[in-house]
Length: 438
Image 1: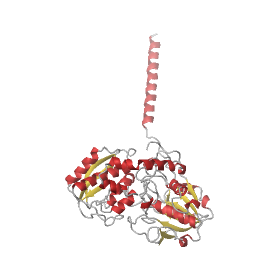
Image 2: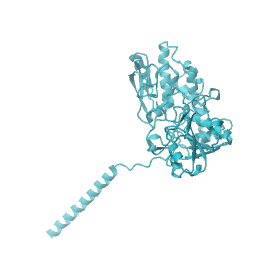
Image 3: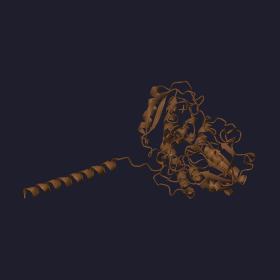
Image 4: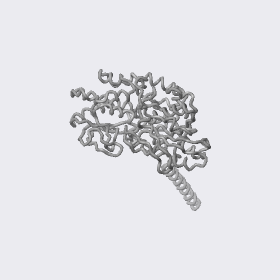
């Protein structure tokens, strides 16, 4: 009997041991890194995967820059090698075909050394393809990574090229790419037509929550440029993208779309921090943190007062710290403002990317700095009022700042127009109904 009891005890402890081992194995599996989801496939990659079938037999012009990639290759190289497509012309937006030209600097015509294809500038004396450039083409293909901000000039180039294609009776194909900010967020002043410029062409908010392909559809549907209603427009959609995705969710490496947006966090803050181009500060060009740090030729104590003001406002998703820096001339930012001068100011750090509302962050920062400038008697602080108005898309921002309006009052003044835009853009969406979160 005792032997039987001993055997039962051994069996029971063995069973418990197996159960314990099973639980530990389950815990280890649960703690193991989750398998990464496949990266979002952009329109150019979808097109190439289908052997460029939709362009077969066509003579093509490609609007492109350094972001125009198919996996590790440039789309121009892939098109030039495709047996069924003739790459006849390349068109370069701001910053040039290779993306190295400084902001606002003219881009020159050139010839691509790899494919031998002529490269025509769309950011110089000519801002849209001319009939001579389009002669002999069947289609224009647009494939440039944007950042989701209205004043980013690539989207103006797209619209003007759509208009030129319509006039020349060419088809226009947009190879879709993610909006780095996601497809849910829309915020900031809606541009008033009287303030249309190359840094703001369409009556949309500063952040508009559309992919580049959806924006093209919206431009056509709303006929935001004369003649685009008749355009033969198509969009090659992405695979695996959804409206709630910000750039880190796409699984894709960040390739700076322009020299002064070196990181995705910079691009996230850019729609609000770009306001500082219109006032007498350094927006961080010529440093390793453009559009994330702002410097002024003031004392450290004055900079601390601005930081204290911003911290008291509890801006969602960011932290604000004092900083000091000296802008230097660097590739992509030649002769930055206050070059060689020691500046004091503040740096904005992203602490919760999903909570950040970039236009509001920039508006609060501009308001705090403007208040401090007024207290110091700095009447020249708004050094480029016309440019600030172009960026805002309205003269109301400047009027409100000078009139002492609170940030909350300024934000409230654009809310109704943004809501109306969100309703109007719905038919242009390609990737489902937008999130109601923002």
